[in-house]
Amino acid sequence: MNPLQRFAAGLLELQGAAVEPLEPEGLEVLTPPELQEELQLPELARLGFGVELPPEARRVGLESDWLERLANLLGEHGRWQRLAIGAEAQASAGDPERILRHGLELLNATYRLKSVEPAWTRYLVLIFRYSALSDEKRDGIVWLGLNLNNGATLDAMLERLLDSLADAPRGQVPEAALPEAWTGERLIRVVQRALPGRIEQALAPFVRGLERRQQRDLERLYEYHHDLRQEAHNRLAALPTRKLNERQQNEKTREEQRLVAIEREYRAKVTDLRQKYALDIEAEWIQALEIAMPVQRLNLILRRRKGEREFPLDWNPLTRKLEQAPCEYSYTPEGPRELCDARLHLLSPPAHGPCGKCGKPYCRVCYPERCPACGTAAAG
Image (cartoon, rainbow, N blue to C red; front, side):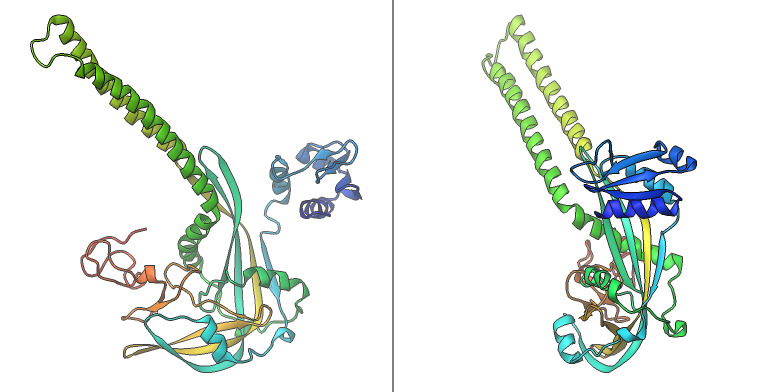
C-alpha cells in the first residue's frame, strides 16, 4: 500500500468501516450510514490511490478534496503522540572529544569537556502545514524538532531519528529524570522565531520562480511604456522650440499630458504587478510527537574572556550524532555559534550581529527589543 492508501484504510477501519485492499492500489469499502454522509460515499464504494485505478473506483489524491474529508473524519485524534524508548537503547558515545571537535564550532569562545554521563531527555517534534499564495499556490509540511533539556534543534538528525523509532525498544521512562515540559508561552516564543526561517527555506525554489516571473513582467512593462514615452518625446522634439502656432501649441500640450498619463499608468501597473506577486504565507500546527529516551550527556564548560558557563549537549544513541548547539535566540540550524559577553548566551552570528544604525554588535537574547547602545528597535 502507498502511504495515503494505508492511512485511509486505517482511519476508515477505526471509524467502523469494513475495508478490503484492491489491486492496483485501491480499497473496497463498506461504510456505515454516518460515514456515508461524512465522506459522500454510497454504502459500498471503491477508492483508488495510484496512477491506475481499480474498476469503478473513485480517485483519492493529494490534489483532491479527499484530504479535507479525511481530516474532518480524523478530527482531533492523532494530534499528539508520545513514545517512550527504553534504557536498552542506551549506548556509549565512544570518543566524546573527537565528537565535539567535529560537531561543535565556537567562533569567539572555547570549551572544556567536564563530564560524560548517561541521561534522559525529552524531544518534541512539531509538524506544521504551510500554504503560500501568490500568483500560484504552494502547500507543504515543515518539521521542527527540539530537545527540551537545552533548546537544541534536531534538524541535522531528525530524519534519521524518526526512521529509527520503529525498531527502537520501548520501555519505562523514569519521569523524574526527564527535563520539564516547556510552558505554552515559551514554546510559542520559540516557534515564532524558529518556524519562519524553515518555511522560507522550504519555499526558496517557489520564491525564486516568483521573482523570475515578476522580473520578466516588469521588464516587459518597462519596455512597453518606454516605447510609448519615446514616441511622445520624439513628437515633442519635432516641434519648434519657439514661436509655436496654435496647432503646434495644442500638440505640445497633448504630448506633455500623454507623458504624464504614461508615467501614471506605468506606476499603477507596477503596483498591480507587485500586488500580484506578493506572497501571503499561513502556517498551521497539525501534529506533535514527544519522544522520551536515553542519551549520553556531554557536560561542557563554555568560556568567553573571564566568564564561564556550564552547558549540556546530548549525543543520541539511535542516530549516533551529537545535536547542534542551539542559537538561543533564533533557533536556526545553520552556522557556527558565538557567546555574548554579558550572560554567555549561545548565538548564531546574525543574533549577535551589529545594530543596523550604530553598527555595534549586541546579544538579541539580552536585548530582544532594541539596541542597548542607541535604542534602535530590533529588526524582526
